[in-house]
Image 1 (cartoon, one colour):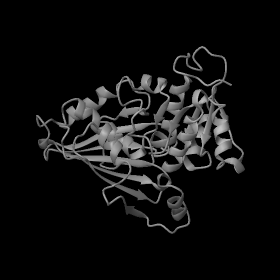
Image 2 (cartoon, rainbow, N blue to C red):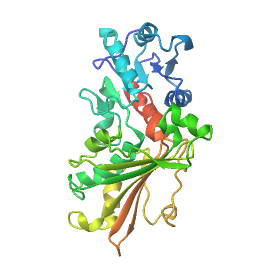
Image 3 (spheres, rainbow, N blue to C red):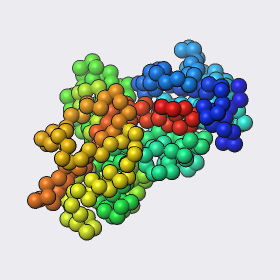
Image 4 (cartoon, rainbow, N blue to C red):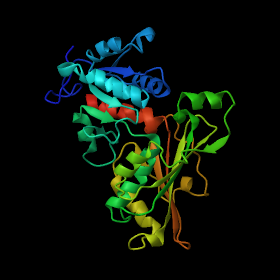
Length: 326
């Protein structure tokens, strides 16, 4: 089997051969979800490696040489080693989608968030190396970048991003702790100001001032809320909340998986928002809650941390990279 190159037509767009995918790390939480989602999509063949060979570099490299796309669902160091294995294949090196945080701000890698810019889907479709976004930055970037681009938020604005996620986003040890009843019902973490998602949140939000990021985890498996509080009078021109909402709506106009929910929508009223409402989907909802009398607003993104925040986003990128309808 030959691998696709950027000079060839995209597999699935005029080719009859079914494109092939190898999920390196398919036994992990993200890998399992990606495989389950791909099983419902016609036109993609997932190649599996024998369980006893999952940590065998030679066996993994041999399978990499046979497929069109490798999806990395590995810890950061292991993902870097996997990329080295693929690069060593030379002309037989497959395209790579990395779901770890190892390459999200690396040169030569395309950030795999299709809704970020109008040209991003085409960039992902032709890239040989794509980094899947993190769950928290997906919500933060979605809220901040359009406001920066619209001139409603200066690049050096002091931004704080608060977020809560289900425990499935914390890796094997956190999942085991919660499922065995050994973890607290709720906790803040990342309080050393060095959370691994901050570099991509900083870069792709187009901020020059490093944002403060305060993540937390609750005793539910999946679901996520990401919020950005704002004092409207500290922004250029002292905009009203409706202007922020309009900027978000313009940016995501026509987006399939990102929806801006208006302030007057019944689901936005009442001052409460369920973190679990979008579980099992690849959707993300954005809202602007505000009180004009106090000139204060809170921007909120709601998503499934294993959906649009991980596996759902990965499948969306797989579809773009292989020319397959998702």
